[in-house]
Image (tube, rainbow over all chains, first blue to last red; front, top):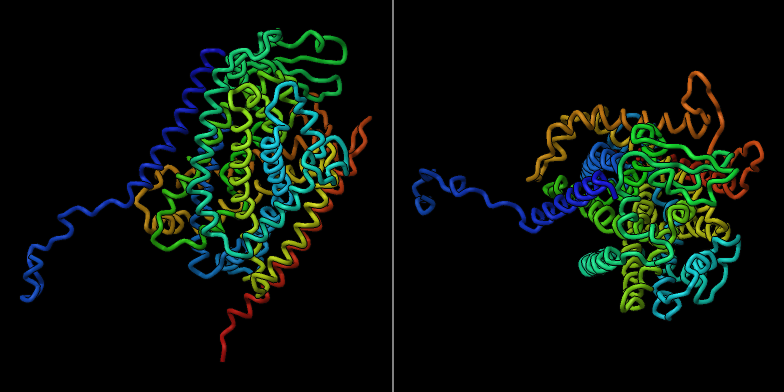
Length: 53
Length: 528
């Protein structure tokens, strides 16, 4: 096998393996949690919603 | 491999996203077949006819796929019985007898070493599953059998890479030259008969065996540029990508139509593509072709054909590994399980179309589809000599029609629906973003790529042009020569019958779409 053959093989197999592992990790990790600052409100809308502060 | 990876990036992955997007869009309008989805997308009454290939392709491919599936089960049973994976067995002879490649009609026998009993079993098993409801069965198979298949493939890969030189009398046929045969870029020497038929490709002219260097054979050097200029190479690369990723089949579009609005189809589409590519390039490519080179030589590979390679070569590999009989049995059994998930997926677009188009129930749609595919499978089963019927239908439907369907899909997404709107639909519920460069690729590059390659392919195979302006020659080659013949070459009546069968299927499918269109029009009429 020539040097070009080794390079082609390593790049090709490496590319598909990396892409596969990346996708599997993304799928298994599931949807990302929303950042905390999106969940809280600075001030509640009404007086009876103070527990959400 | 260069053509293969360019095809993957420029047509495979983008069309995959296109199909997932169009499918889910159609599902939200309660349509699950390609014709139904196109009927929603187009204001014109002709739109639904564009989707007819989405019915023809999976149904016709199923007719021969079920036959190959029966090989897998048959090989598993014969491995368990000890008829395979031993040394000194002529696997090519076994393959020819088992599959019927040795002669027409000889596969219509029902012993353990013949495919007949397995075809019948597999055929009814598919329709049993599709009738009874398959989601849990398929899910179970995918969850356990697929990782097991990958594990077995990894073990076989290790064995292949450590085979060294299996035959000391042929020192040139070792693992390194086998890998080089597959991966070396650049110049290759092509050996042709005097009538222009390719016999084999070698790393260089010096590697051509002495018995092929006499009269009756010609040799020509083919550098990388000349190789890449061959439209047949690009068509084969693109066809392989379509088949691997199941794009253009009408299968993904139907499966995606059952997804929810907030499912991440961008990640799902890419993951499906990546998993297929890992198995094909990372496992299959490193196992089958180098092993075939080691055991059969370069000339042997060319003589094998696409389907036969794994069935002739892998038993040789199993014969050379400890516990080969067990591994062979497990491998072919898991391959059969993997194949059954594919064949069931090929039936679902047909079932979906018949149910929503003809307003018939599942029992009726299964019966109708079973009857039509039964005729096709019987045809391929009987005309098995050199697998001519299978190969011809695979070429015209499994390659040419896939091209047409893929082109239609990408044009609809890029120009009919519009990339902007398609982009929004694709990203509904998606965390992963498609790189923006793919907007231009889907709109311009992919359709242009498909149209150019397909046009060049037609110029070469239908009109037989040699791409020379100064010394033009028009001589149809390959599959076209099978149909019309050539000087000194009689046309193949099996190839002609196969194309006639495809024509009958097309007319029948167009008639069904016409009936379905009338039913959909009635459904859309306002009720008083």
